[in-house]
Image (cartoon, rainbow, N blue to C red; front, side, top):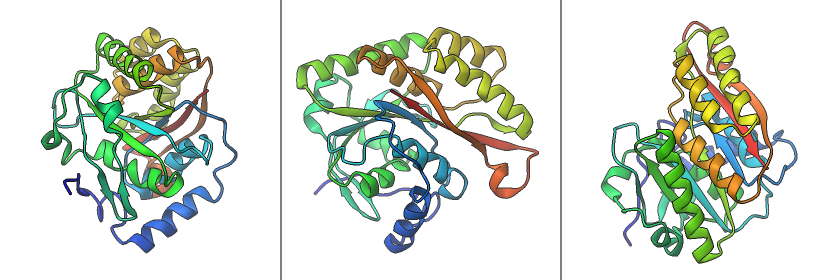
Length: 262
């Protein structure tokens, strides 16, 4: 069977199933109560740095969810927007792809571009562990400007109308990269404040104003626009952290945020 194999297991997260399951269980052990989120922002760094924040994102979704997760992540290698149409491997087992929804998106599939991209892969073990009956539709986003986010949102909403799928939408993104922790926190919370108001143009303006190096601002915007069309009217910051909280070195950190869209 053709599938998308693990590319960063053993690097970003444990490749051993028992170790991975124990780590995920620890992340979710104090993750709080579901908020019935329609979409979330979740980090995609190594689990030792951002895994707890990612778990807080997924914990905001009802644990019984068994529909389809639309995963939107940035292309770190500059590829164009594309989807994957094959099942995805994790150390915990295979996660099936929702091919019908994928075809309804009218986005070109490109398995080669997906094969080494970590922004989507690191999300899939969380889904397999927490929502074992769910399927995925992975979208790698190339251009991240506002118009591209609008177009992707329109494609997703059109596909949902045609298929009637029950979905939750994951925007995979870290925030500031390699600045002092105080700068990262100030800048990132400044950008996230615009998300709390569902003001996506203002989010773009703030990203540009302070040159905030959030790698997935386009996926975040596409997720927010889609959820708004589906009826969401509230975005809530669940937790913010930096890599410095783990390493103790605050001189050059990466910022991570869990944001729930309800």
